[in-house]
Length: 480
Image 1 (cartoon, rainbow, N blue to C red):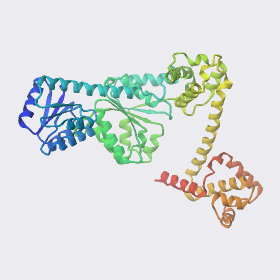
Image 2 (tube, one colour):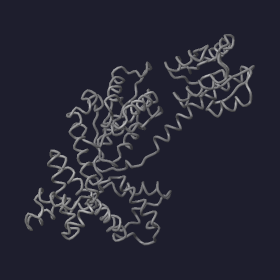
Image 3 (cartoon, rainbow, N blue to C red):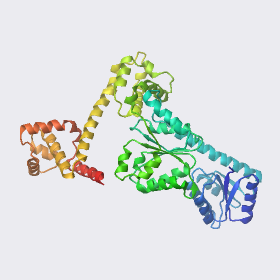
Image 4 (tube, rainbow, N blue to C red):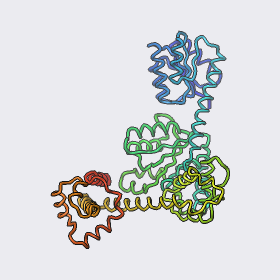
């Protein structure tokens, strides 16, 4: 396919000269005699290069302003600025604003053609470098030959050969983005752009703008939607329209979409938070990455790959681990999956543990793993409490929290109501009334039962009013 060049110049003879010159070299051309027409042209489609006159009807400021607008819409389009009566300052200003090069009239045809050719090659190289960075930034590994992973890789490779849309399920840190890159790398689109877009639901307008840009950038490539369940309604509607029409802003768009989710997106569909039509269009080929604890046979290989990335050394870290250390590592649940394992390897490297001459013992790795287990237990307790609360009506949730919280604080201050009231920010008389209304201290047996229930929630010792408000807010979100 011939490269498409846009020529913007208010002089008829210059436009016609450039158009003929480029078309003789098999370029496709479009022309614009004013900034207004040029804006319409760049809104309609993207170009491989632009030749832009600095001086249009309204002076040099209009050409430079148009340059900024073009680069805002397409940061990688090379813009060659031309002018017959500009100053060095104007040329420098154009280059600073992002112009590819500057050519002064009159110019030799050969020089212009060479510049256009190099500009298009520059754009291609830029796109390839961006694509290479995207495909090489693996924050988690997808190494492994275990039976739990073998089926996933086999299906991924078969799917890569088609243009089917894929939805990848998996816990945080399990390697969903890496699997998406793996699929792109082994697909017929491997030389085309790959973009990973993280979805968010707190700014619908910004998300829609980012989605539009991503679809334009990957019109013939692969678009990976991370946390797809967070797409706002407006973005869901736009994506559904593009998948149906295969067009974005009037331009062809046949992007291969790979969606990533760590949540039960089916629940979002059932609750009406995610469009069922869009879900079924995205979930043509479902892939589920097993947790690391389900493929412990892969851990040694993953450790070696991560260590080589972290240290730059080719020595296998697994060979430095004692058998007891390997057993301890494999027996840990790794709730953060491969990402957490990567943190562990980095910890070993930074503390110098990997530089010892002796085998690394189980005791040496225990500090990290045991501390992680304690953190996991605390988080599990807090999540259990929050899940209990979220299933209750607001009034019952507030009463449950107040009861547990106040029992915890009263115990903390050895039954001293004055100190407790000061800490929680309540008047002493108000605290007495609250204790009575919640039947706290009804009996020593009841008190002990309450204290047993709240041991795992000691981390929630924050300001009383703030926490009650936070629970009310979370309950409101669930019901909304």
